[in-house]
Length: 283
Image (cartoon, rainbow, N blue to C red; front, side, top):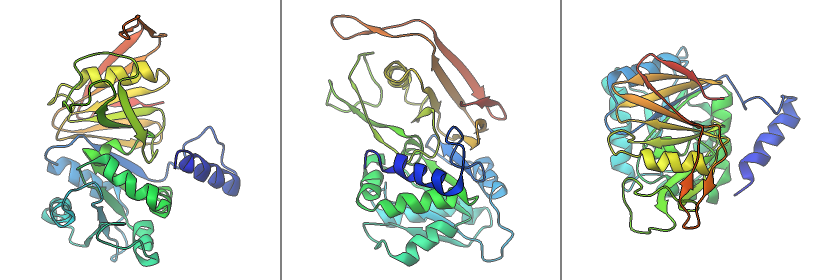
């Protein structure tokens, strides 16, 4: 699947005549949530940004990251139902639910989508096994849908996806205790947003070292650390902070170097901290 999404985007460019230097689409929006609770301000904004003018408009929860799809579906739908939107459905595509043409049509035609938390690699395994899932999500986004996701559902939004694993320290920790080259383990995410690497539960779990490592490994990308109960709403090249806590933006304008023992050194790192209502450019 390594080059699947690049090929898919190129196909759309050839078919539509789009400039390849531009994002795939600016019609839809992304609501990338850092995990934890989803306060009403985030849920209300997803509903406000979605086109719900059709009385048959519906929202969709994708549960492939979760350990228990029924639990993920229930809690994925609940905040929207609590805010008065009842037309909700859940799919566990590739696991509990078959990847049928009808299910894919539901993904393509959803007014908004919520990708539940859990394990981002578990979600992407289903996309790898069933590339048509990724295609359907792209089509929904390019048609104007709002694609949201929390925790694992946030990590998959960027093309370079942090898995949470470390190559040199296999025992899992919620943060990194070292700034080392070739330690960060990444995989390919959906790539709905380019030029950034997303990290989640950020302030709560003190994940600064992990995201600093990411921008040292990938200096042409910005690192976006989103705290719990907080999100960024992405339209085109601009992100707006929505929620109760903070978003940290790391940049790297320098050329990192490495010591003989593999430790990173570098100059030109930047850090910006944003709260609710602030906006910043991601490209």
